[in-house]
Image (cartoon, rainbow, N blue to C red; front, side):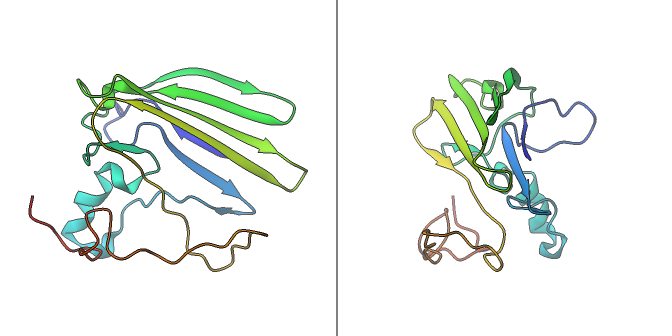
Amino acid sequence: GLSMYYGSAAGGHGHYDRLNIELYANGRSLMPDLGYPDQWGAKAANFHKNSTAHYLVQIDESGQQTMARGRLHYVADLDVAQVAEASAEPAYPGVAHLYRRTTALVDVSDDDFYVVDIFRVKGGRTHDWLFHGPPQAGIEVDGVKLSGPREGTLAGAGLAVGQEHAS
């Protein structure tokens, strides 16, 4: 199953996560939302309230600015694929002229599938596609070799995870 969140946070609880996706297969979450890493203490609040905890595009190295409702454009249930498209320009007011995601879960067989993810963004200077999968143990993909982590973090090659940088 593949889900995409585009709705409103009007229920009193919400994250800056419009157009976040999550993928479930083989009895587990393959793209877990990082949620609330309580062991991080006070830093946890800064992380889960920021867009970097989710699977989406961040504009100009800043999290989404509002929790405003996005807009569903369509859902299609086809013979070999399920497709959805939504947009959420209000997440970056005055910056995003286009903030739209199209996802498809494509069946290859009864047991196999792949995901197509197209995220279109206009506005701002820098667009970072944020992706963080589950631990690598137990995941096997024929013909694909995953590289090790790069030095540093998105904040910079010289910055370790959890290290704060001067703005």
